[in-house]
Image (tube, rainbow over the protein chains, first blue to last red):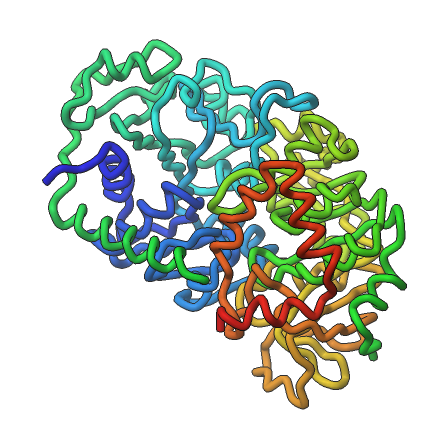
Length: 256
Length: 281
């Protein structure tokens, strides 16, 4: 079955989740991946959106983190202060799923600004929940497309903290959680090198070459000793993902 | 007990030039009609607070009502950026905009601190975050018991807090159902609270643990059916997602934006909102 790089990315990201996870879901690519996981191999996964919806099971992907669908299908909905105080800061989230506009080799993310903060070239939306998700979720999964504009040697702004300067930087700052343990892109799956914490490629998606990788990333890529090939999406994964997108498109094209 | 008055009257008596206003609603229950009334009354130099400034703050900023914005995520959810806000931040159009930027967790805590009559809020957060370097209102306090350093920031105490809800009863008690956001905290943190509602009913029919704001915490109740559109009201009408997608195009161009505001805000009143949701229900 033919598939797009985008579909490969979503499928690879979905596979990282298990039924035991309690996942704080960012909007966009993470939302598609988390719901694909729930509809395939991880039916028990608990999805939480920052609007306060706990254990939500949306039939279509929400356009915003606060669509009514999320509340109607949730186990319960709490206030936003409670969400951040008891559930995130309280340490009950196993996986925080984030994306970004810019990322560096240590998984630090920028969604705030391009250029200088006080006279920006582009004003992006900002951090929302991400600065605290990045330090309070037990692990962080990142999903974003590779491009020289996005995968940069130095991000313009530290919206959310990954491994900082690498090594033991998290521990030095008193952060007890693991940080970005997995990155799923449209070309590869990455994970931190155990000592330096620099993200390294652990598997390439089918057909992706190291030359194409080099052209899409703004630093010299580190490869694990034993780089595998990401298994392609199965027919079942693709079918469920496409159904989900079709339902979503139909729902959002109308008036609600 | 609050006054049951027209929205125009409630805004005119509470929102004045230079005051601070929080119009809240976390995607859900966003008080669009109230924002449009503020724009029609031509208020200037406002300090606006809102976790997720989206379309209504884009409109208030683009119409030159705002001097300062305190926020944590400025985007059109699921669609993209706020083009009027960007124009103000990047080019100072139509007037320069000062920003004070926080994270969601911090804003939520700061409203809670305001509602709790505390001078500041604290949390374990902003660790390694760039906002610490650019926002002088993010400071550090040391836990007196463990020595741990925690982030501190001022409580939010808006002069006026404005929210929307599905219903109030005749005593002015307001029921909030669905995504709660910071609706309760906004009302309790504000010096004056205005609530627009879909309808006034005899009995709220609330269960014992429902989120109810007693009428005596509210200054004015204004009945504005459809007043959250294109945001939504749980169980009443859905989010008009296509309007958010269209907004991206309208706001992309200054002239088109101004023409849209003239036709859909300045030349009308709050009675138009009921029609806007009629086709959605």
